[in-house]
Length: 374
Ligand SMILES: [Zn+2]
Image 1: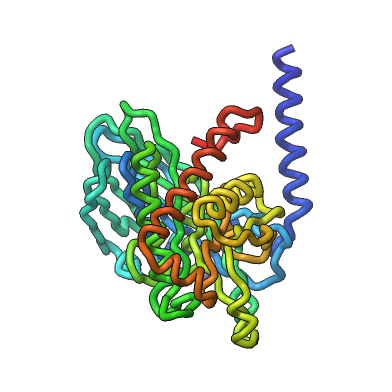
Image 2: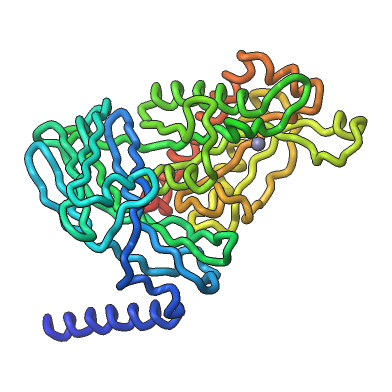
């Protein structure tokens, strides 16, 4: 009986790989080539530090419809230790900001002010080989996962495929709190909407920083995609949510008007809306509904219908429940006056936190509790 079961299991595995192979053209099976390692991302949280090594391949060809329909399988092995964890990557060449590692014997090291990690060292230890050493206190838990990024179409018609090797180091004794990724929209040279002497990017950041404090008070761990006026690429914003396995990703914005709209018409538009993606891997319409109601109820803004926006990168490259809140309409004088005051930005932050908290408690209580919702 056991033998038969095993046979069935094997058949299932074979069937699965056949199905996978049938849907992926040879262009998108990325197994043999030398991969590049263009960057390493570090996320320091309250109870967890995370290193994500980007492993990439760029190929010509047509993009599969499914943004995740490719196989980029990094080769690596883990050497566990008491006060350090090593990951040895094979079949890779460092590029970009890690170029120093391309030379034999090349080394990079970084001290980390995280709660769990102390230092990260990287070295070129042989042809096509990079060794990562993560130093931490004794007894901390290290875990490796692989996280795919949505494939990216380059202007020269090539496609970039990227998979992260994710090493998480957390305090072993404590239960892991759920992680919220807050994404203050725009930043740097991109001010977002402007109107009534306000820059959207500044308001988004302030609301997100206020929400961060409130989430922390409620026992969540929080990561912000920017803590200052830095520019951040859209895929990098989505990466944070995916790499950290966030319970929710919340992009914080304030709305503008189409530029060609005459000014008198612009002044009529006002209020709050929340965007979601019904085609997402983990659609979050329920969260959008709760958040819009909570924002409108707290700020007393005009309520706009929710918007289903499958083409927005932050909503279609995130594998966790994701929404984008448009808190107020900046060209509208009343909305602008309201959101220019910090007391209302604090209220907006409270609404965002309360809605997310409600959403996550419903999910935890209901039958649809997801595997990734830690
Ligand atoms: Zn915006």
